[in-house]
Image (tube, rainbow, N blue to C red):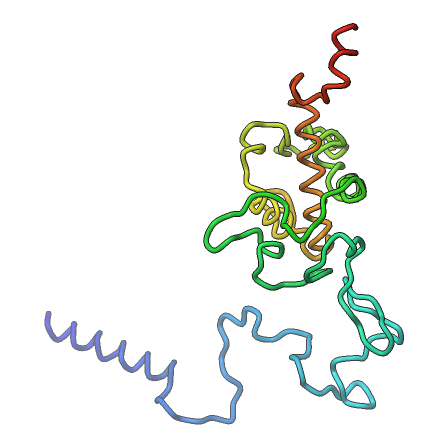
Length: 229
């Protein structure tokens, strides 16, 4: 019985050596690749040359006059500039530093409130309304009730922005969701500038206030007129 075990063990060793080969042994033959996965792709790695183009450069120059997204052309150089950069005195456009205005975080915690370097005024809220209607209303609805046009085509699970759980989310976390997406919602960080994300959040709060307002929210000079009615 034992000899059968040793015989089987010897066969297994020979099979492994035959398949794997000796360590360090070189061969001019093509290797046997059982799981190629994505090892071979019809693309060029960065900084590699190409035999297809005359200049042998795989990375092609951008068309003349191209300006990176989130930038404007200033002379011979590109500079960051948001669509409403006048509302923010700090980094503009698609900046990616670690400040609260760019991450929504203060240390390890979500922050709340619009960053202090942003002036919240009627023009800023109007900008937020415009960006919300362009980027958000098709799912969340113009009023934020989660009944946008896409719900008529089978998309389910769209958040109602007036739910108490949504209203309790810190502003910094809302910024994170807009930037990187969550669940069925895609990431909008590459499409919406930093300032516009905060403008959308400010307008979202205005929508929430409009649907959950009390009499005390009405300016005093208008309350008397309401009482008369």
